Image (cartoon, rainbow, N blue to C red):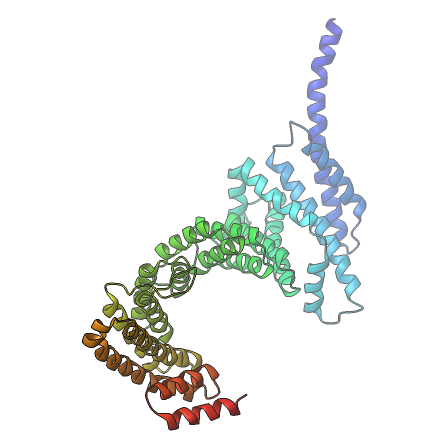
Length: 451
């Protein structure tokens, strides 16, 4: 029994030494491989031996959580990636004479499993031994004079991983492999943040843009949210998330992120316009008008804000049944609403915007006058005999007044779009209703000629 006990005790330190020797074997074999690389004849026998040894060390409880074990794993994985990249470059020499083009193609074609494994090891080292990682970071930022040989080599790998991650991302983007580009731009930003303690806004932004190009909703939401959470967001990040939620049909989440964006960037016109459109879609007219007022104050030369505001006031003044489309009773504040619509349409036209906006501003104003004239005429025709005696003539006169107000605006609209049949038809009817038969006939001939 004593012999068994002694033997059991002896096995434990022997096993521990055996596992530590695996780390030593990995170290020695890796150094032998690096020597063959320097000689220009990389020998994978050494590198495979290093990999087998380090994998055993990583499977053992005693050595798997040591930063040095993961440091060797990072270097070994990166050495495999470099070997495969070099082989890909050699293949391309015969078909791609341009050195830069060849490099970009090689980065795009080389498998990334070993590259990713090396990158993950840096994160693992940070998790296991932050103090050791701080030493590596100082080597990156302050120089490697105070570091040992192995640590200098790990610093070199970290620098290469960061640089080549950016190259891979750019290569994938150039090849229009936007999904992969998004991941590698993000990895580059993460590595820069990890190694240099700076928030790499540019690469994180590129990751978000690439996700958008890929139309990958999951990545759009993920990468943009990470920028927002890291407090390095721009209005673009909120707008991208908003659009992604809309494409998913999640209007609640879309409005929530839009609200947060408006709070973070209250002066951004893109977010303001998106919010306004959502208010309009949901029938929140007062909220939309408040936004349009704010927008026009920031950009008083933008006719679109005035045109949309005019349209909102017009619809509020002249409500219709949502199901049948029939006119409803005029609201109590009709006069104010009508005046506001009139003012905004006129202001939009006054700014002399693009052809489309100018046409719509003039046509809408003319149509509003025409429709109100028609409303007054219908009202007059529905009066009782007793009511007609008192109010009939007044309503008829007022109706004609609005028909005549409509004509010059529709004529200007037609001058902007001379072949527009809707405007011609409206003018023909107005000319005849206001007693101008000559112009009515002329417009009728134009309509015939345009068929």
